[in-house]
Length: 428
Image (tube, rainbow, N blue to C red; front, side, top):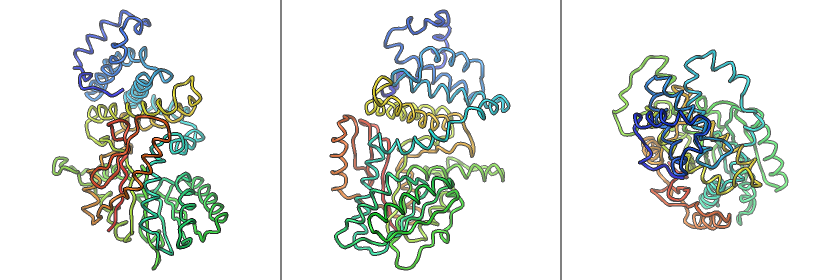
């Protein structure tokens, strides 16, 4: 279900449609032809986003009323996608009245149990992160096969599904097991403790020299002294779907000092906090820096631009989930709901939030390439044998649609022709 350009209807046309179908009431779905049921929710969502961005409240309300009859979190991928975007638009509109927004929101927070379950499930149930982890592991082993002491820094992900297989791979190196120190940066103390316990236990079972260094804080507060890098350590850093959050920090600075930046001064907007952070980790002289980010343009200023890009991106994501896990009637229905709730939270942040609250600022690989190059990083070519192995792994999943594409020193993990995640490696 890819969103076609002809679905981007003009607001007037959709307004006329809303009026025409309002007479159908709760029988709207039956009144529409199958093709209309497929495209109308998307057209209504786009119209609603345009009205919402202009400050209009009444017209988005009419749109959302109609969407509610066509969208469902238990329907097909199109209906589920529409339900998530409609929910995000609703949150954006309700946030105009802080009291009305905060009262029910505080009582209906996403349970931490489900939040903690979603991320590991993402790397286990879908091949995207598993492929990214495999590519990184193979490249890492090739790059550091001769090193005796390795210091690995995890910039926020803290996923045991990555670290435990990596430890096992290092323990099988032909030249002997290196001493491995893992520094993990995460502001969730409980997650840090759990990860540390699992890695220490795994290293013990492998008879592997190991040290775990937890740093409980946000990436924005990190400095090189905290990493405790020692002479003789081969340093490697890894960031998986976290670095884009730093792009929100400039909005915090702008709001405090009331600065006005020319957003058209360059193709890649300068972000002081991001530049400072990348310069900081570059000064630590890492032998390799691995970066995994969403291959999307969700950091645009205009809501409508973010909304359209989000529809394209998450339509591919929801299709891939449906193809991999199936619908509610299948055995993977519960897992699908948990994953789509996680992605729904991303959608809500992209659509409903502005300023420093908007943390899901996904940008395309070429922008990261410019930023990293500006502070002195150079791309490392991914090993072709790793790419071939990951292609075989995707094929072994038995799911058609996933592809791996080599593009400009990065590997793109795609659903059909739509890139979803970019994996790249860098050195100084």
